[in-house]
Length: 481
Image 1 (cartoon, helix red, strand yellow):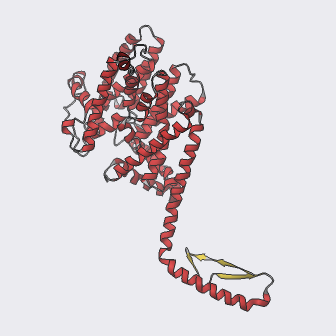
Image 2 (spheres, one colour; image 1 turned 120 degrees about the vertical axis):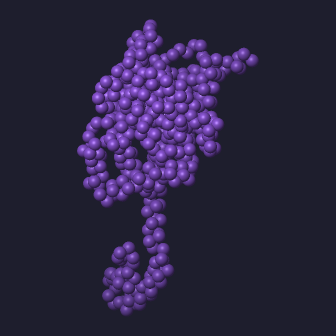
Image 3 (tube, one colour; image 1 turned 180 degrees about the vertical axis):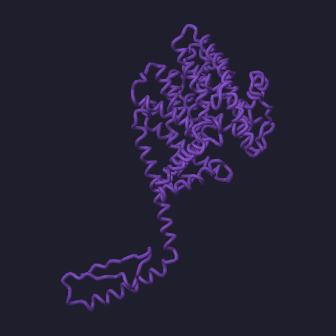
């Protein structure tokens, strides 16, 4: 008996040098063993000559298969684990419902990735390509992986908080995203479709959070309006499906809003997990899109004031926002990033300096004074709520996007006519509506591009549509009939 061992050198077999025989009690039969060795060596040499052209291709295929297998194992883990976590169980969708919702999110992600992959200049494609460079650095130069974050703060300093360029804060949002995607690439191997699947699972809890908020506010409504606002907003599903900063901002908004909602409804904020989640959401917004905090934090404070001043809450909220407007224009006398009107003009100029596309909007000049802001208020609100306009939509996708806000305005009118009389205005709804309106002001005054408006605005429709859709009395027509 003998054992054959094939040795590989430089990823290739050495057919003439690599065959060794180990004899166990058969020293008297060495000639027969040598003849068998020659036959085996001839067969191995022939097989090697046939397979040599595809050797390296097989290695590449095995590496690709490895990333597909890792992604598949990760997804199976998500389908098994998520329905068992209390956060998802308390959504009361059941194990099958959670898995179907996750499957729907993944399917939308793959469709969105297929759409964006056809557009070489799409943000999703360019961000995926850029993250590949950070992935290579993570593999080959791990000591330098985080060095560029420190370098931006050393170069630009901690100032220019709201600046989009020539600012450490402006560049850190991209660096943070690239570092996250580089870690995900360890599983997916930089494949944009696999990246989309993994990224969608990270954003999926945000949809469940808004579904749970809608359920807590409108327990007696049907389930489909709640599912609609959580999973049925087309622009929101599109722009949070593929790897992009928007998905992370949406996740952070969901975390902060969910903890805030539970706090308003009697759940203590003292638990360390709630505090950690809320602070993590604030930090994520601070890093990626810090100007959102200018709208969100005052809206949260307005909701708290309404909570503790229930008898005159509308007067208190109105007075608070009048004071906020005075503080906004009064900050024009402050230096640097504390000058909020100047920050608006700076972001407006940063967007205007980008290459002009087919979706560019006409915007009048904006003096940093109360009169200047009031003068272009109709134009800014028209852009924020209604852009892109259907008569100026050149492509079919843009035409479909232009119809979305009109559908929501129609739902708003239906909600006013067919609202549930027994449902009052919850303090969380005050937060949601004031936050949404403030963000529309910011978007309208700073973004002169319809495509960018669609993407930025998509993250905030859920704050308007939750009270609108869930507050409609869908049974009213049936009762009247």
